[in-house]
Length: 410
Image (cartoon, rainbow, N blue to C red; front, top):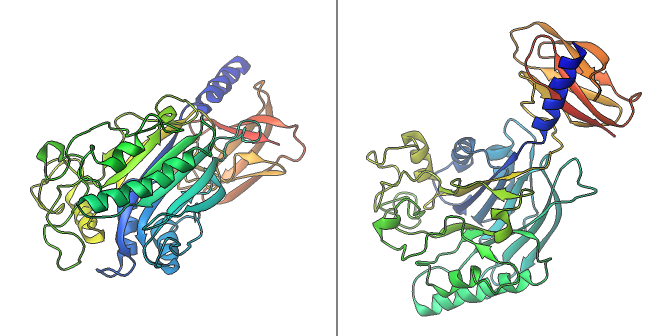
């Protein structure tokens, strides 16, 4: 029996170091919260529920009230996992629309925020650290830049977009060459040959940036690229405003440093980059058009139509590091909510919505020895004192439920 327990714990230890997933989304929110319809924070909540981003990067945010509305209504309506960076009015000219980052604070720690000045709008720079068990000895930092480049066609606008991007690529020279970088935004570029886009992916930059889907071409009004178009979600501008003309442009991007393609500490998951809501059959149509059937259902596409004239872009990354989880809705044990997997004096957890009125929970050490046993009642918080335990890894198991949860006592 002890051998079986030891084998299960060893397997759990291996499994707990399996890949953790990070969901990233960029979204042009269209003059939020000023534009119609009313209640867009609720619409946004429904959209986010379909993807559940860990990193939520936005542009066209009008004010701090809008930032709070997104945080409290769209993201934290039934949880307290999300935080946001400080809203600072545009410093690169007349205050107006701004960028911002929302993030899961159980997965990330905000190290710093800064602003790059440009001829048009700020580029917002954020440094996050993965909230991992070994962050003290092996910190994983992500440098996140969020931009909204100059809009419209014409050589003068292309030049302004290039000037803005030059500020980003110049700042890369201040980073360690092995840094993990995301550069996301509404880039407003019409084709891959445009100077701003070429500057982003220029291999002579201090840190090489790549487009995860590597799909060069003339994206504008070209049905060859209809699966990656992000603007406009609306055939006509009424009644909600914004751009019209249907889906025929790829304006919205998340680009990544080249090392994110291969480094197991932070790695892009192939095929995960999407124009969210685009079923690849909506060229020059509204995203809500009933003929645009596919993976993204009608309800979601109606919400995307109402929310903005842009679609979000999304992608997923993974890390071989283990997060310090807090206030999670799931753990490796079914129906168990773990308050924190990094403990000092006590371990708190709850049996949630179980078919059992009560269960037995056991705490084992790495040798498979049972250290403690407690009874946990359905939908009630349970506490195990860990103040008397030595530092190291321990494992929770239940007689009645499947799964093993690893805990680190410090």
